[in-house]
Image (cartoon, rainbow, N blue to C red; front, side, top):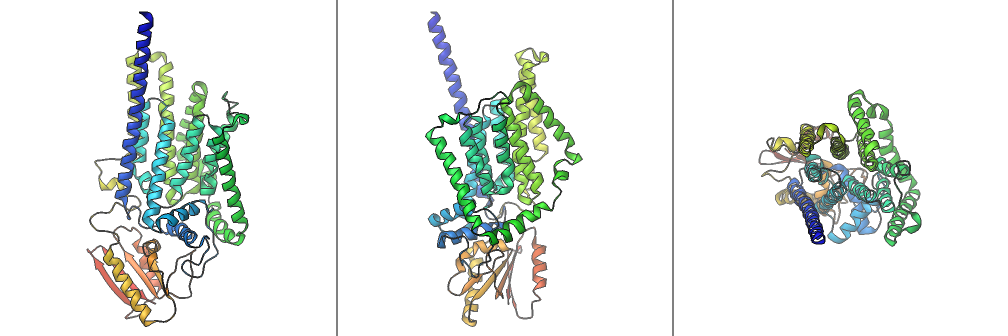
Length: 501
């Protein structure tokens, strides 16, 4: 009878474990689907076609057509490399398969973000309270920071994917795979290096924490493949950059690095307004040092992501603050639960569970107050991000808008000789008109192609663009003469001016 009862207990435990796993994976699947739905809803207005996207996607388009990032895509190429070529090469491979389009690149970014969510959630599912942690992760990834970043064809979503993959592997004690994934971050976007350094520091710190490193002598075939791939990517990146020194100097160094070096990093990191947060982080570190040293990985990753946000001080780096706050919130829940479990104040199970529920409530409420969790009552107001918002009944660009622009360009081709050079305001709109580059038509785009003159300047003033005033200033600078402007309006909110040069 005793053996039968033990068997029943084992079966029940296995069933309970299976149910827990199914629940966790179901929650992850639901939130992954919700992220994709919100990604599709973001469309071409959240954000509007962004100038930076063209700086990285047009070289990818060149790679797809000519197998070089510096090909004569639109005209005379400016010898400038703004970023290491990993992300651009990846997009170039995508364009070889799908053809060039901003939508394809943004969908890839959305997929990177969903993969980042899945890996982050899987890495966090071992922290308690388990279901609360998974739901909190899902609530973060469906906030405005993650959705708009996942709909932008910059590098941030790919950086988060590499970070999440590294975090997941290190969490599973697969050190070599984890470090290999994290090693990709600096060649995706150098600004993400603090997360890579956080992973390296954790690996070096493991013996001091009493944690075993993965034995190097017993590496699996997959470990060797990951490590070899990371080394190959670094070598290929180094080889490319040293063979384009002038382009690196004029772009990556003179534009990107110089801008960031001009900032007071120390003041940004240790400003008095963050003193309370830093003290709280230090207290949490003390708790996990005593009770759960493996959680130092979570603390280091949170600190790394937060430092990217504070050091970079860029518009699109808000996502790193959001990611850091997610990780730190999970750490607070985990550390709080450890204290509750070991406290004599909560001797009874009911009291412990009640205390954990209170902790979860205040953690969620705090993030809600910080706008890190969607406020369903705020509606469109919540989704406002620097003045940008989801598309409503008016499309940012439709077939009629494209047809009118093509008609004016065709007329110029018939009236003028030589190349017909077109420039778009805002600059990102050029990503939606790349198909016009055929025959004698060219597009001028900073860092991509430069011309002595512009035959047609296309100004698009949209309710979705919070920087319309910048375009008015650019229009004033052209000193447009009489008879040189064709005006058009749609739905009283979308206005175009076609200025002849």
